[in-house]
Amino acid sequence: MKVRSFYLAQETMQKIVSELSEQLVTSLRALNVKCLANSTPMQDSVTGMWKQYEAVPNSMIQVFPQCTDWRGLLAEHKRVQYILSNYRDELVKVIKGCVGRKARVASAHELDGPVSVGQALQMYESLKGPFEACTRCLFPMAPRATLIQLRILWPKVQDAVFRDRCRDCMSGEGGIETILEGPAGFKTPKGKAFKAFT
View (spheres, rainbow, N blue to C red):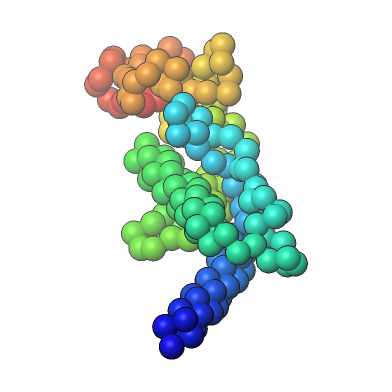
């Protein structure tokens, strides 16, 4: 009787594991496709730099034979979910930062409620336009001469040496007040009329 109960319990456990694995594989496959389709970057946990998304191994999301390592599937599912949610949160943070620096975003009011990765990415791309993005903070940036020429203050200043990053990230400061040497109306005593390029 005890042996029979043991085998019944084992069979039930195998069924639960199989169903859980199937659900995780289906969900993980969809998340992986979304990340690849949107070219979603992932943030390095040590340096904070953004790099190319590391796709889920095919052995985990293949149709047959189906992966039954539910622990590995669960860990990978959490990893991809974090990549998406972290990217969305950073984009929202950047958009709000741009709006705070007087950038114009038509749908900025949507940021007051829940925003999906797709919505945040659409707003970000529309806002960024032709500007490059800092590989550290994702903030739109351009050379100082370009910003002066365009008379735009909200993007950050591109670092003169490491051109994939903004000057703020290279200086290690979250915000610095800078004097703009440019056309009339752009010469501002430090800390007076506006805080530029922070």
